[in-house]
Each structure stands twice: as structure tokens, then as C-alpha cells.
Image (cartoon, rainbow, N blue to C red):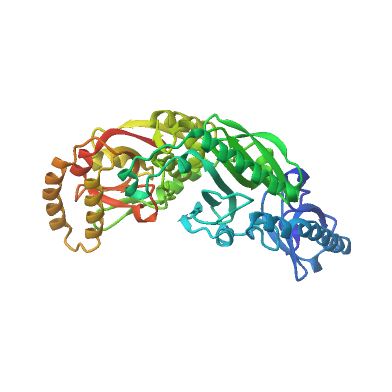
Length: 482
């Protein structure tokens, strides 16, 4: 396609913001010129990107001889530059992070995750994540990570990678995953031992990357809330490797676009109108009366007490505000768990207001009746619910959710669970196993609410009668509203 059909004006882009080589195009027998990034050249067809981000393909035959030669020569030089470090970098990382094109930003996040052996955590039309809690000999960049996660954007392309090494959440907790977390409140190990492990990991990672890319620079990056921390930075082919050591918190290697690192960690905001339309579209209404918010990203908190950070990450990403539970956890969490939810909420409120343009609000939840919840659910806003995740509650929620799959007469079902809920609520009164999860739906006919926990896809939705929910209710919650 001749590029003059895309635009007839001269578009200028700056070299610092781009990962690919820049070229100036001129159409055969034409006079207009266009400054673009050269993304790929295959079979005499160039893949190009304009300064506004739009990508398009142009056969070289459409271009002037000068432009054709410029593309061929530029692509050859670029490939030689990339290939100089590509194999060495993959070997140093102990994984083939980079495919032959040397650019993860131009390929699906799922492909990157597959090469790193990361299982799917969540895929929605707007965001995706692939997370591995590592075991055994898994190594990356010269050290053994605890968690590796790849995030994808609304087009499914790779957005960023976050690799967490020694940290207070994974390293100080012996609790299990999912419901098993509440069978053991975890125990702490000596913090000096943790800090020693963090120092070892940081030194090993820095030595590994430096051996390929040379000495790093240092800069400060925004974290979550109002947090800023110092990082070591290496750049290669539009990728920035950022190594952070936050004392007594975590060692983290993040891989982001160089332009994102240049901006100090500031991300672009999704418009209110787009978010409102997206959230509303995610609300489903079923024939049996179920009203449910779909496409909420799942975050698996793993074997640590990060239910609040994980749940807030889910809500923030659902509202179009990028987030990471490990960074959130540094703001208000003790080793292995014990989040100060109020303090975390205050930091999240700052982030959503200043960086995402959303409003985080604390709400009372004295009643969990569907008519009290629908004002938020009906517009696609999940409610973050403070409650007690008791063994009896989880048994009922699991059994009730399974039973719903075979219901044919919803009137009889509503009567039966009302009787059962009256009995169950009498024994679900213990104040223990404090937990934060999401209310994502309701059914006014059966008097049920739908709950989602940050324990992986098997807990993405469970149903519970309102009376049973009231018995474990701590009468407080939060929303990230629009």
C-alpha cells in the first residue's frame, strides 16, 4: 500500500523513543516523505510504524530506489547489531527470551510466556498475564526467581515482564496456596538471612547482565503509590532491564520498553469514556437471574498472605490502571502476610487518582443484599470485600458452586439453599482467617452473591447465599470507581 494513502503529511519521531531503526520513505514518482520505524523486512515487504503507533506494510516496489536501498541497508545493519548480542543474551538468561527478531514488544505475550515456561494465569480481551511460581532448578539471569510473570496488552502483545527473586512474601511464608493458606499462618525466618539472599541475588543478576551488555546506569523509577526506588538499568534493542533491590522487601528484575523507562515508570492513561464502555460491556445477565462481571483479570497470590495486594491488582487492572501485587505489598504488608489493608487502600487511592484518573473509595458493607450491591455490579465495578475465609464457608461455597451446574428448577433451588443457609449461618460466626476478595455478581431471585478469590482460575467465581455471606462479613470494602 503506498504510504501516501496512509498520510500525506511529514511525521517526525525522535530516536530516543524508538527501539527500531528510523528511515525516511519516499514513494516512487512521488514527493511526499514520511519518517517511520522499520519493524521488519521480509520478501521485499517492509513492516513500518508511524509516530502515532499505526503499523502498515509497504512493498518495496511502491517506493523510490533511494528508499528501497535505504530500507535494505538499514535492515541489514540493524540485524547485525541485534545478532551481536541476541545469542549471548539468551544464554546469559538461561532461556530463549528473545526470538530471532530480537524484539518481544512486536510479538504475542503468549509466545514469550511459552518460551519461559509460564502457564496462563489470566486472559481477557483487555489484559493478560502468564505467571509461574518456580520450583527446583529454574534459573533466570544467573539467579533463582520465586515468580516470573509476563503481562500482555489489549492486543495480546507483550507489555512487560516482572521477575521476583528473594522477597519477604515468598521467602518468609510457609503457608500453602489457595484455601490451604489459612491452615498455617506462616512463620518468619531471620531477616538478616533474607537480606543476605537478596544481596546475593542482586549481585548475581547484575554480574550476568553486565557480562553481555556492559555496566549499567542508575535511575529512579516510580513504583506503586507514591513510592520511588533506585534501579540499575541496561538497554538493548528497545528493551530496558531494570534491577531493583528494595531493602527487606524484594529483588526484582523487570523488562520494559525503553520509552517507559525513559519516562521513569509513568504509563499512559485510558480515557474514562473507554473504561466506562468496557466495564459496562463486561456485565452479563443470564436467564436464571445471575448478574455477573466477566473478564476480570485473575492474579494468583500463591503461597503467601498477599490476598489484599493481589485483589487490588485485579481491580486496578480491570479499571485500566497497571499494577503489580509485589509492589503493592511493599506498601503495607509484613513478611509472609499481614497486610494493613487501610494503609494499602490509601496508597492505591493515590495511584488510581494520580496515575489512572480513577477513584478508589472505601464503602460500608453492613448489608450484602443484592439490591445494595447492584449499583456497582451493574456498571461493571467489582466490590473488594473484607471477610473471614473460614473452612466451613469455603466448603459451602465450593459445594454450592458445583451444585449450581445441575440446577433445572431455580425456584426449588432457591428454597432449598435458603433453608441450608439459615443453619449454616449459625456456625459461621468465628472471627478468624481475615481475607479480602471480590464480590462480582448477584442473583436477586435466589438471594445469592458471586465471589472471586485471588487463588487462581478455580476460584474465579463461587456462589454463596447472602445469609452465609453475612455471617462471615467484616462490614467493609472498597471499589475503584469511574
